[in-house]
Image (cartoon, rainbow, N blue to C red; front, top):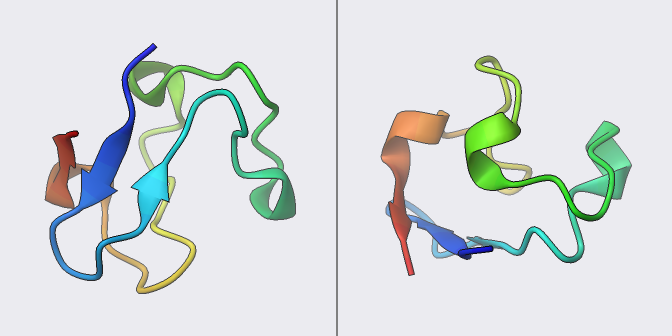
Length: 52
């Protein structure tokens, strides 16, 4: 699974880790994140992420 980086703040979404603080389990692919998921650092939307 690919990692994605926030174009605004540099946060890296790693699917092997997920986003447990926001209810996203480890193993969740970026493309399977809810459409309303936001960057946990700056609040950017999924559209503001690029494949690393």
